[in-house]
Length: 380
Ligand code: SF4
Image 1 (tube, rainbow, N blue to C red):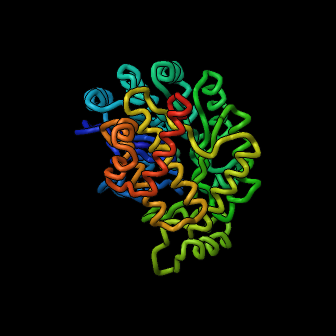
Image 2 (cartoon, rainbow, N blue to C red; image 1 turned 45 degrees about the vertical axis):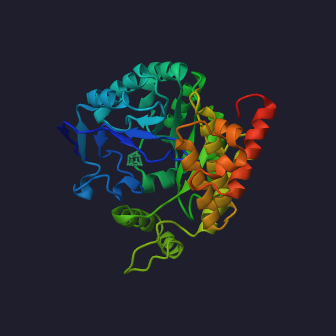
Image 3 (spheres, rainbow, N blue to C red; image 1 turned 90 degrees about the vertical axis):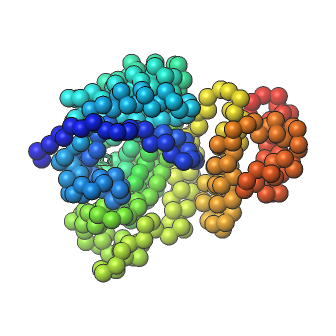
């Protein structure tokens, strides 16, 4: 396919997320130098949302818009922000060979001492291992490789032009050997074809064999144009798969699919991945990096609250309970003063004054703070 590059000067580069995406990647900021992706995976969620703006969705993998001022903008915008985890750069692009904007962005992240998370399908990331190691020494840098499956047939059907999985794993090994925290985003798990124990365990074992320490699993979502393309790819692989997906996403010929399968499917998948990770000594969550400082304990409390939402999801708890923990996590994570000092001064009642923290959550947070104090060390 002939690629076209369209250069332009962007107005802005950093997306400041309202909340960190706990308990998944713990990212607060993101910044991407290119729009579009030459790999053109059929299941790519970027095909389905507002990512392309008013562009023709079919141009996603042949027209790459290049924000030529990415590096300058990143330096300007990041220097005004608190040091929380940023994900930036894009090594999946042939454009990166020509423009090297991702490398320039890493230099900015290093200079300003921000923690960094890279989520990639491309082994080209190892080209910049010197900078990644430097960032990891000065603050923190983690790399997650996206691997949907080790099955060559599934790769051919859903991501025929993405980088070779074996090369991604070699890159993972190289980064792990350099002391970086690395793991796998087992996403999207292909429903009814790549979600059985054998397929999942292959990815988990490959991660372990290449120095990874965690695997985050997530199912396939369906939205807009992406949904139609993904379904078509499934049909071409096996017409019976289309029938099963239509049932799973409650999708009749004339209507729209549900965004994701029923909750019971998601929790079954999460529990199976956890069991397999346990079996092979890996984690099914990514450890959160928190910069040392006066609000470190707030972030750790928020981390616990976020992790609790995941436990409740797996247990298929009532939605209102999950939302209570999620909202409390958001509040605590962003609170501008020390929660521990507030508790010291005013006890549990002072915690109940925080928005969204009722009696039971205040009690839970108090117990965690008491445990921390007893240990006499920052909460881990
Ligand atoms: S490599 Fe990633 S960003 Fe590119 S099309 Fe595939 S899933 Fe989307």
